[in-house]
Image 1: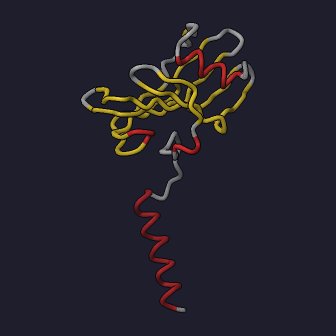
Image 2 (image 1 turned 90 degrees about the vertical axis):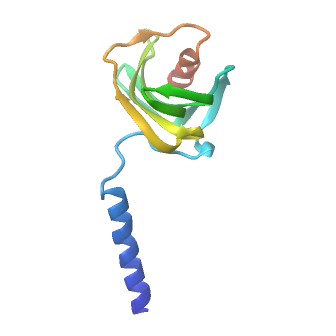
Image 3 (image 1 turned 135 degrees about the vertical axis):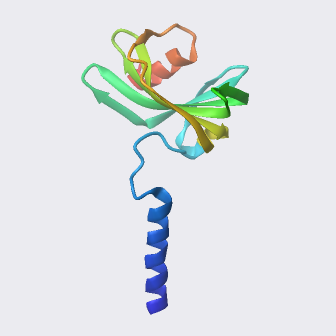
Length: 141
C-alpha cells in the first residue's frame, strides 16, 4: 500500500511538471468525437464544437476546426489543421477570430506551430463561405 501511495504522488508531481501546473487557457487538442462536421471544400473540412458556444450580450463565441487535406504554411510552420475561437455578431452577420492555433497534424493534434490573437475588427460574413456556415451553427440560424 505505501508503494501505491508513493506511485500516486510521483505521478501527480510528474503530471504537474509536464503541464506547468497551469490550466489550459485556450483551445486545446480535442478528439474528433467532440467536433461536428459542418462542411467541406476541395482543400479542407471544417467542424464546429457546439459545446463551446457561449452567448454574451450581442455576441456569441464558438470554437471551430479546419482540417486541411495538404499542409498549409503558416509563417514557417507546415500545418495540417487549426483551431480557432471565433466571435460572432449574429445581428450584423460579422465575425472575427479571437484566438487561433495552428497544428502540425490533422484534427488539432501534434505540435502547435503558431498562435494568433484577435484581429480587433469584425468582418462581414459572405454567403456560401465556411465562416457563414459556422455562423449559422453559432447563432442558431
